[in-house]
Every structure is written in C-alpha cells, then in structure tokens.
Length: 455
Image 1: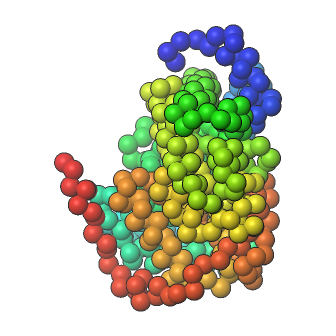
Image 2: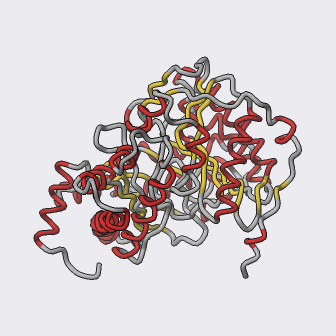
Image 3: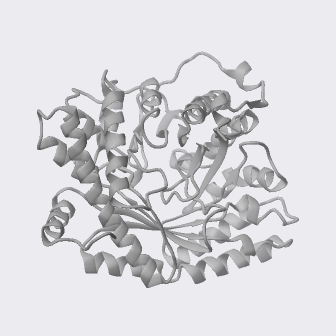
C-alpha cells in the first residue's frame, strides 16, 4: 500500500460495512496442480486431494480471523486450481469425474464453499485431455456440490472455436438434465468464456493460470451498495462529477481489498496476486448494480440509456481501482448476473430487461450473460448461438465475455426458479424463436479479427 489508512478513512470504511453492504466477496487461493500428473488416475486424484488440503489447510481460519480482527466481512473462501484437462492428460483413464470428486472431497475438508478449475482451454482446438474433461463436465458437476467448471472457447488472437461452442451447448443441456431435480443447478457452476483471465477469483470461472506462481492469493471485492449510496447523495450531478464520485468510491473499496489480500497472503506465507474490484451484486436489497443505474436517472434498468449508464459505471470503477492499486486484475468492473441482483430480477420480471438488451450491456461491462434462466426445451443449437454471439463481442472488443445460462428443465417463460443464497431467483426469460441450427452446424473456427495482428 502506498500509505497507511487515515482515521477518517477507517471510520468511513466502518460506515460502509455496517450500512452499505460493503464486503470482501471472496479470498481465493490459487494452487498449481501441474506436479500431480500421473498415468494412474487414482494416483492423480490422491495427489490432488493431498496438495489442496495441505496448501489450503489454514485458508478458512485465516479469513475468519482477519474478518473478525478488522471488522470487514469476508463472505467466501475459495480455491482455484490448474485446469484439470491438463493435470489429467497423462492419465490412461478417460473418466475425469474421479478428479472432480477428489476436488470436492478436498474442498469439503478445508471448508471452502467452491473450488474452480474443472476446466479446459480449447479456443484453437482439443487435446486428448480436453476431450476427456469436456465429456466429464456434466456428470462431474452433477455428482459434486462445490466443484465449478469453465471452458474457454475463444480469444481475440485465436478466433472462436465453433466446434467447442456447439459442444458446450450440448454439455449445458446435459448438465441441466442431470441436475433437473435442482432446476438445472449444475449449470450455475459452469461458465463458457472468451478471453478468460488466469487470475479471476470469482466463481464459476476461476482457475489457476499458467503464468501464476505455485500458490497465490487473489481477492474479489464487492460494494454495489457503497457506490449506490454515493450516487444517491448527488442526484443532480453532471456525468463528469458523477464519474469522479464513483472513481473515489472504487478507490476506497479497492484499498480495503488489497489490505485484506496482503494480510491474508502474509499470514499464509504465500504471494499476494491481484484485487478484482468487480461490483458483484447479491439478491439483498441495497446491493444491486441495477439500482445504481436507476439512481443515475433511469426509470427502469433495461430501458433506453442503460448501456450508456453502465459504460460510465464500469469505466469509473476501473479508473478508481487502478489509482488505488498497482495489482488490479481478474475481471474488474460491474457484473450483471440476472438472478443475483434484486434490481435485475425485478426488471426482467416486469419485461423491462430482455436478453437482447443484456447482450448490448455486456459490450461495456465485465463478463457477459450471467445467471440467465431460459426455457428447459431450449435447444443445444440455440444455446450455442447465444454463446457464439457473446464470444464475438469479447473477441472483437478484446475483452473477457462469458455465458452462464441455465435451461431449466420443465420451466417455461414467465416462471421462476429459486436457487437460494447468493445465486438468488431467476425469472425464465424468452428467446428468439428463429433457428440457428444450420449456422451452428457449420463447425470450424471463426477466424481472429484483423485487430488481433497487433505485434
């Protein structure tokens, strides 16, 4: 940190915690599992369990100690590991569900709520390990509670692997069917990326990237309630002033996040990585990104002007965070998960927010179409087409985009699904009825854009 916190800053932070829902959303321990490779999958599973439980033994207790001592809520303690498609590639077995269960067992043992990294990077094609991982996703997520999966299908440099996109449409459908008793909840633990970051602390997309150290602490802060309060205090400010207010608020939030991250890393004797300063909403009243946009003057999020308001918010958050820390990373911006944001839920239920508008909003915010519930009879081709659209936005704009979509078995447009906790309530949204089947079945790779030739 550049300087110590002043007394007035400490009091302000206490106020934000007590009255404005400020919290550390997650401290995520990244662990490399590259040294767990072996030809026998059961040996790999044992090595995965042993390494995770050893490295993460004190993670939860350390987080609870810091939360109590500093008076700052730390909501989640999580783990991200090397993509399992790579860790398991030397195995002779093709069933990686065994490895998902080892991750689950380790996560339970150390007490974290989620573990990410049942993942593959297939933006230019598939290796043997990738194929095996992908074929194990649906079953792996159905047979575990805490394991999260992510698949990167596109990058700005490589283009979009449309074979992978189509396959992910099928996998999402299979995952929903295998978890239909829980309304397709397995799909809430599965995200499809373009330009996936290697240091993202947020689930379901966290994995421990190739450029990361043996272990690392990455922190994800939140704070929509704090930003909302700041915006509400200046109801007539012009946009330049409003941007400054949001930047100043993001600065304070980020400083708190880095303080917690560095202290966690110090106590665990491992490196500190980054602060992800994403505004991550919850279903709680007053903790909504949608409410911030409406406080700017929109009658309802989803109406005309929403994309511009979100662009201002996202940019100001990034600028404020970058001034507060030299180690900002991950996704960093504003999340717009429908089911996890009380304002988004309300707007979707009232018809103000549709999928097309959400897609437009993803051009200017973090990640993409997140926690979207759609009818259970939605085809794999339609889901793949939605993924392709979002990947195209990420590829062309050189940004991370993603899709976390849930075709809820047996549900139709207008119905609701209750996931509970931070996952919230998802209204089942309507989709276009026009088919993209012939388009998706072409296969191959959509080439990288001209702007990828930047060397």
